[in-house]
Amino acid sequence: MSQHRRLRRIAADYAILRGCLLLVACYAGFGLLGFAVFAGFWPPPGPDLGADAIRSYFVDHQDGLRVGMVLMAFAGPFYVTWSVAISRVIARIEGPMGGLAGVQVIGGLLTGLVTFTPATIWMTAAYRADTHSAETIQTLYDFGWFFFDMTFVCSALQSVALGVAILRDDRDRPLFPAWAAWMGFLTAVCYLPLTLMPLFTSGPMAWNGAVSFWVVFVEFFVFTAAVSVLTWRALRTLQDEDTAEAMGMLQ
Image 1 (cartoon, helix red, strand yellow):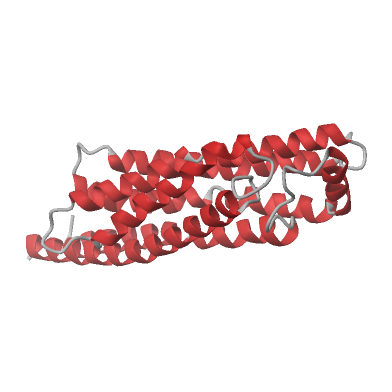
Image 2 (cartoon, rainbow, N blue to C red):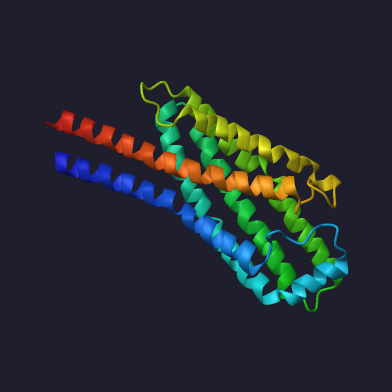
């Protein structure tokens, strides 16, 4: 392979990875627009509401819910592309035999699934809200929330895998700062209270409560934003290294 072709290949590879990373903006943008704005789930109706109240919400907000859930389902796969970009950086840290990059990708795939599956469940409840019974809508609404929250281990594994990879980085100048590892571990810990969510219909542990909703959502998006910026920088460092190596080998 000629020098110019090799350099073009490196530039193209990193451009694709940056594109994959930036698609997280579509995940956050379309997802929050659908979930928080159109569906009005910010915060969502709580589990303490009766079946008739839940049905009334779905009937009154039927159009918004249908549009919102389409946007939320559309957003889900973009989280996977973001995870793929991060996994390539992890792979460079740990080497060909490491498994953390695979955990990152699989965790991202499952988190994408956890995003668009509840959206389709809530869409089902909203689609014929005016003809469904109150009990049917309430059951679908509950099912969506349990699927959304009780599968938190998918995202927790991602943040732990990244944290472990960062601490394993033995470069003179690590690709990620050490604090990002501890932020990943903290994010995983923040998910743990969700295990108590099925025991409560009100209060901080309910799905609309201070812990299960606000703490988890804020930490998730803060961590996602921080990792996106740090991964962008790491990709730039790796591209510079690969470019310098290619030029040195081919000169």
